[in-house]
Length: 236
Image (cartoon, rainbow, N blue to C red):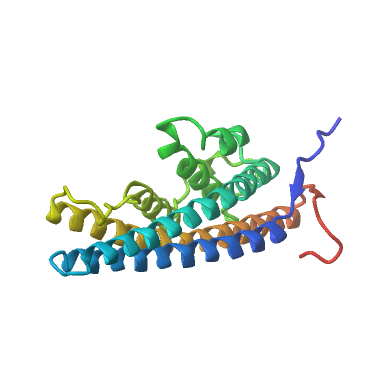
């Protein structure tokens, strides 16, 4: 008896939602970079008469944007993980065996301490390899297909933003001025990197989705069966 094909999961609606959320993340992180810039300007005038007020205002601006940033990022995480899991299930539907990291790691890999610094990018690089339409169904050479510089750049900038998020408050009396400036300057560039990472994430989501659809179309043309779920009437 022929084994039933793994259901195909259309991602167009989720991809559009992710693009909107990631755009919002990019804007919020850029505004936080502006807030860090205001803090740096306050630190440049540490001897000014109104330094204390300016420092408090700058710190308040950074704090507000930090809270908004965290809220927006927390909102996007479950959507991104669901997209990643659905893409991993589509990888199974494409018959990419043997798998290096299965669909379970598309979820679990985000929550394993320390391993979550590398597992998500490994999963998505494998999804990129598996979506190569030039490699026939059942051909294990997909595992050694080309990786994506786009995926690597996205993840690298994401980690930079994560590790440089904090900065250093200006409204305090006992601090090393050069260290405070350095911490805030690093955080500022980290936010710019984070905004760039969000833009690259949009490209990763869209291009990987397009690659999987292209690979599916090539396999269907070659006679591979596909079932599909999660679609709506006119959704492409």
